Length: 204
Image (tube, rainbow, N blue to C red; front, side, top):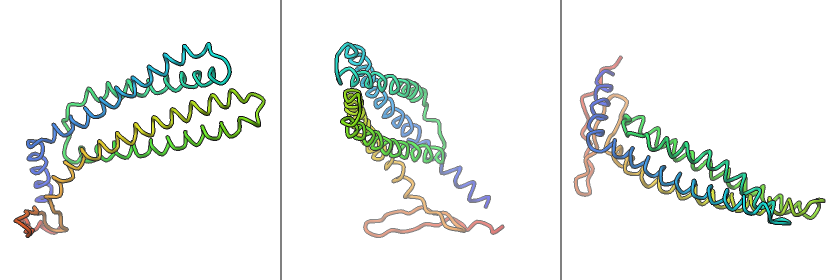
């Protein structure tokens, strides 16, 4: 067991020297870029929303909802951007894998929420004709559909980008093989694959 722990610590050190900090910093840069895009979208919605409040009919409610979404998105984007800038990449191998998985799962979860937002927008539009204030429902419904569609595209692009980036880490881990009583590396030689196990760990 002690040999297993020592080997993992040694492997983490080798991986860190060969680019683990750079991998983590690149993940942070991806997040920075994404949050900048989200911030720009938020500011655009806030600006157009303020101007559009003077409009009449459903346009007023469309811009009113856009203004609200812009403010919420900005409150999410700015802390996210600042947090990504503070990332120094100083994570262990295990922590890097955990963080990479967390980021990918977060954007998948967000994409599911985006679909729910779009369903809510469609519900507003469907209910508009049966309401005494149809303009409000149509304006809100169209805004929610637009916002949900943008966020779905945003989260999909962020997930795909992070997933492609994460394959570099997973590919490196594929060179390591763990067994119940031993550890070894998988070394590809042409079309053959040879396993080179370490000395079996002592059984506790």
